[in-house]
Image (spheres, rainbow, N blue to C red):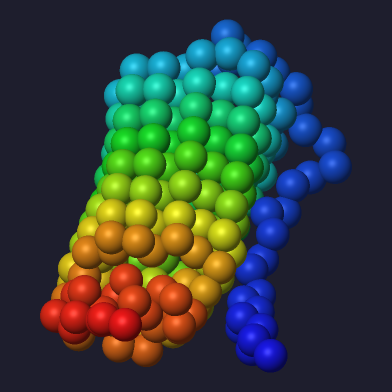
Length: 218
């Protein structure tokens, strides 16, 4: 009988019952600006270049942020549904109590970001960059992180479910305690010492054996 994965308590975003409904055309991102308690729907906020934007207690649906650079973005209590963050630069950002649901984060740069109570659900994060990030008390569910760069990232109390890490690079990452049993880790790039304490299936062990230099023959 397979032991059930450890449950991680992740605090959900606290969204007010009453939000100001706005269209994308009504939003102007400015550096050092606070955006709070809005429900934003369908549109484009692409190729923005802003510093230190604060977003609180808000919902964004069907919105495209493609190609934007939000250096030191600060998110708290935010929900993104079916949004496009392709190639968005989140470097040095803080992401707290935030949900990305059905979002496209292909090639997004999350390097040196801090995550707490964040959930990625049904997202496409192929080629995403998580280098040197601190990802704690968060969850990845049904998400594609193939060919992502997780080098030197710290994963602590992170729950994984049916998430693909095919050919992801995790050299230098803190992975201890991660349960990969429902995930695809074929071609995962890591050093022997990086794999200490991870939880995998016997079938996955065959793939990991290549990193250890073991040859398995029947």
